[in-house]
Image (cartoon, rainbow, N blue to C red; front, side, top):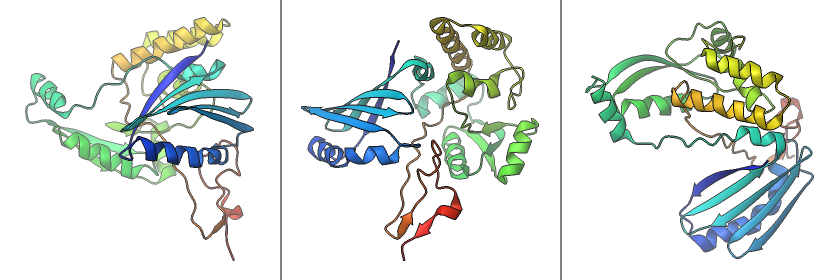
Length: 268
C-alpha cells in the first residue's frame, strides 16, 4: 500500500514565474537522479504538474501544485520504499516555547550542554545548530574532528554530549534504524528494550503490512521520547560550473557526490 509524503517548498517568485521555471527545467530531472532514471513522464493540469519518475525498477509518482508563495509536493512511494514514510509530524520551530519549557524545567537562564560533535563534512551544519540552540539558552561548544577519527570515536562510543551524525545505508527504514537503535548497532550508545524487541520481531516477520506497522511503532517511540532530534532533510543540491567537462555527479549509481576524482575533467 502506498503512503504519500507531503513537502512544502516556500518561494518568493510568484505563481507564474515558479510555474515557468518548473516547466522549462523539468526535462533536466533525469540527469540529477543518483544512478540515473530510465525515463520521466510529466504533464500539466492547470497549475498542477503530474510527474512519474522510473528508476531502479520503481515508479515514483508525484503531484506538484504551484502556489503563489510555495510549491506543494505530494509524493507516492511504492512498495518497500514506503517503509520510509512513518506518519509522524515534526515539532514546529518555536524558540519562545523552547525558552518557556526551559524556565518551567528550572533553567530560566538556560544551561551548559557540553559538546556537539559534528560529522565531517557537516561542520557548518553543526555551527548553525550550536548558534540556534544558543538563542534559547542551550550553550554548546562545537567539536570538529577529522573524518576517520570522528567515525572511530563514534563507533567506540567515545563521543559525549550531542552527536550530529549521518548514515547513508541503502535500503529502507529498518536498514537505517539498525545501526542506531538496536543492541548490536554499530553506533548505538544504548537501547530501549521495547524498541530492540520490535526490531527483532520485524526482522522475522514475513507479512509486509505487519512489518511496516512495527517499523512505524519504532519510529514513533523514538520520536515521542526525543531519542533523536530531526534537524534537517537533506536535499543534496549539486552543480558543476561551465568550465567542467565531466563533473562526476552520476558516474557512481546512487552516490550523491562528485566521484571518482580521477574521472573529473575540465574543458580544454
